[in-house]
Length: 239
Image 1 (cartoon, one colour):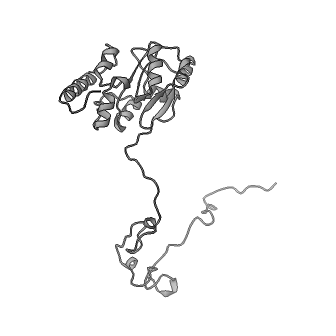
Image 2 (cartoon, helix red, strand yellow; image 1 turned 45 degrees about the vertical axis):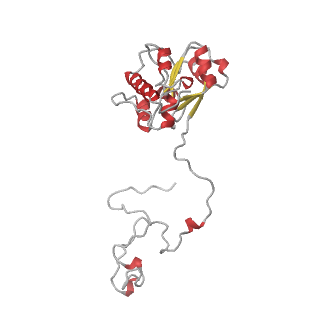
Image 3 (cartoon, one colour; image 1 turned 180 degrees about the horizontal axis):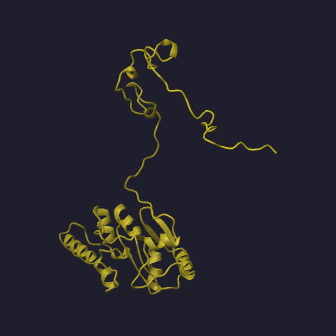
C-alpha cells in the first residue's frame, strides 16, 4: 500500500487547471491581443461603452419576431390550489388538521399540514367525494364550488370566500396580522365576492349567516356596507 504524502505548507499548490494566466491586451502583436485588443476593426462593439441588448440584430427584424405566434397569455388569469373535501376529512382524521369556530382553516393551515404544497393565487375548495365529509369545519378560502358549499353547510360547518391579492395571501401564509387586508378592486371581483351564492366575504347575507364568529373582521362589514351603497346607486344591477 502506497504511503500518503504529508500535506504541509511546503508542498501545497493549486489544483491543475484551476489557475490561468491573465489576459493582457494591447501589449503587442506577439501576445495575440495587440492592436485592437481582440475587439476587431472599427465595428459597433469596438467602441468603448458599447452594450447591445440580448437578441439585437443590428436593426433588422430579430428572429424572435419572425417566428409565428400561437395563442396568448391571459395576465388576469388566476391559478387556484384545489383541495377536495375528502382530503380535508382525511387530514382531520389523522389529526393533521383541526377546525373550530375560533380557529378556522385557512391557506396557512393547509400549507403547514401538507394538505397543499403551493397556495398559488389562492385556495379553491372542491366537492369531490363530498359524502366523506362528516366533521363540521370552518374554512376561509378564495373560492369554493357549489357542491363544496352545500356539503360543508350540510355537515354543520361554515365557509366564506375571501379576496386575496399577492401581498394579502403572503401575509396569510406567514401569519401576519399587522397589515390591513386587501379589498377587491376590479368590478368583476367586487361583484363576485358580493354574492351570497358564492359565500363572498362582503355579502351582507353571508355575514348574517356567519353571525358573531370571532374571526369575522370589522373591515368585512364596512366593505359590505360600501357595496350596499354602490348597488343602491344602480352601478351594479341586482340579480
